Length: 507
Image 1 (cartoon, rainbow, N blue to C red):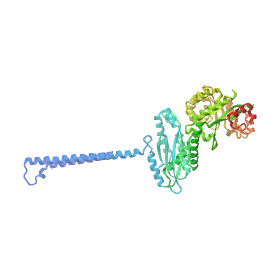
Image 2: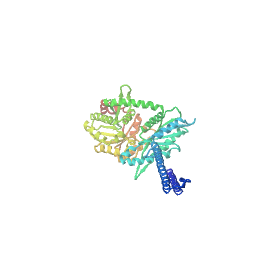
Image 3: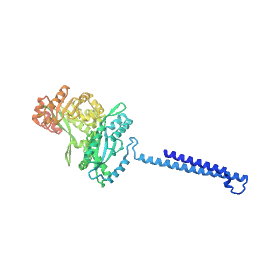
Image 4: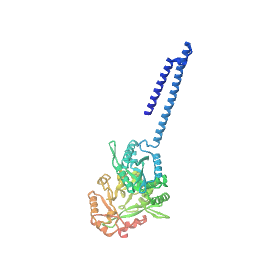
């Protein structure tokens, strides 16, 4: 803008000079007459000619000046367009195009012998829920605050960019070690997990971070980013704020995951995944009071594929809804063959809580199979519950209104909040197996959990009981129900009848 005013001033001075020159020519018109005697008409013609020349020259100069100003305007517009092409308009951060340019530059200028460069890929946890519930204007405010916090967490000179949506990236050059990258990632997590206040509402989000280290000019930019993306995928699988460095084993696991996904689609379509049932035993009478349904997949080539390997894949590829309903339908059908006082325990995950209609779907299945809702107990972990409190209220509320009971699984390993026990009207807590393994040597914690359950009027089940002495100690401390390999592994549907009839003695 200053340059434009300078050009206008120059144009004004030049035109003023032209005016004075023209005036001088008119006044001193003798420069056109020389020594000859001029007539009045010729003098007037000379004066008119001089004025005409001045006017023509002035008009030409104005045209030239206007063209020059237009060129300046276009140059500024082009420069601004180039700047915007490398800038994220919402956050003011550089964008993916600028990141790609700087990454190529970093690879072309490798770090010193004892240093490394790093690419961090970041993805927010819980941002979509804020967008859906409070609107995109609140989501935009969150992204702007996240941008400020990321810049506060990194070193001076590190490049923070926004790729789009809730995805960000950082290019950090000349790190002294992987530990320094870890330190940056931890600062990022601390900054992002601090509450965000938008208006009168406080929001909490998390972040997943994938880190790729590089130090060779032979590295390809796309490969560096791919490695960070693979590491980010592993971090996001934890459903909480986490960071992961890329390692080559991740590629092997990713290839295995892709193969599992392809096979899983076939298995889900052909009904190759079935529920097996682990007995839940009354420690006082040794009789089976219920069964926990556990998914089992017996692959024709790979053998048994455990749920911890295929359930996360089913969640990420969109198969979990169909798989869960199919498993519940089969388990409910099996449960109708048990005595009326034997209940079915069925696990749901965070993904089901996000589906606000899951409760209605589950009740519809129970109706189709003829299983009373009072004979179904839904299990979920407290970590899943707290990540979507509104979803939990909706889904569990629908189920509880129909008579379905609710159990908190892995109790004692997470938040163990009395608020959640009360607010979600939990019927049972299941003590995690990690506390049962040494219950004889360190019984105090289990005793405290049992006391908590009794004080709140909740049923308590101990998981992972494998030794007789563990069952004896639990019974002495007042625990009435347990499950684990001491009684039985999960069994097929037709074997459940034997356990119902014979109880623990058949194990």
